[in-house]
Amino acid sequence: QVQLVESGGGLVQAGGSLRLSCAASGRTFSSYAMGWFRQAPGTEREFVDSISWSGGTTYYADSVKGRFTISRDDAKNTVYLQMNNLKPEDTAVYSCANGRGTWAGDEGRDFDYWGQGTQVTVSS
Image (cartoon, rainbow, N blue to C red; front, side, top):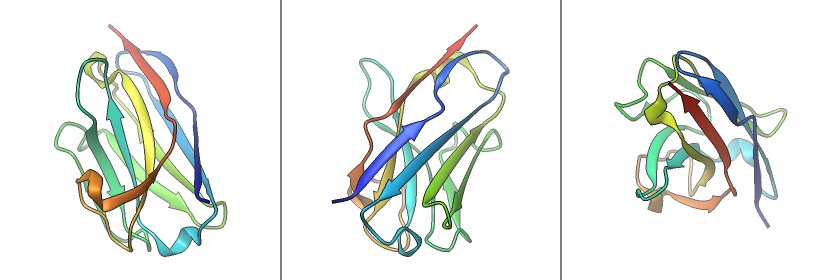
């Protein structure tokens, strides 16, 4: 059974930074792509970014490009989301997701396991 546990969320002022972590278990972590999604109240889930199994390819939503960075540490079975220059519109629950294969795009169907999420709140 795959488990994904996020941490690192919190309250930060606009312009600040946070780093989210997602610890994975139950599957050979290094063989799969990983991604992050977010969902604000009253909105649909939104793709944030993804990283291939090797870490060599990343893909970002336009809304976070240049501000967020996804990375992975296969020795720790962990994927990270470094968020800089945060804006109030980044406020959401952030969830990591395990890809179905070695590469994942921006569609929810590209992923088959999801974490519970961690709240990120950015004040203006």
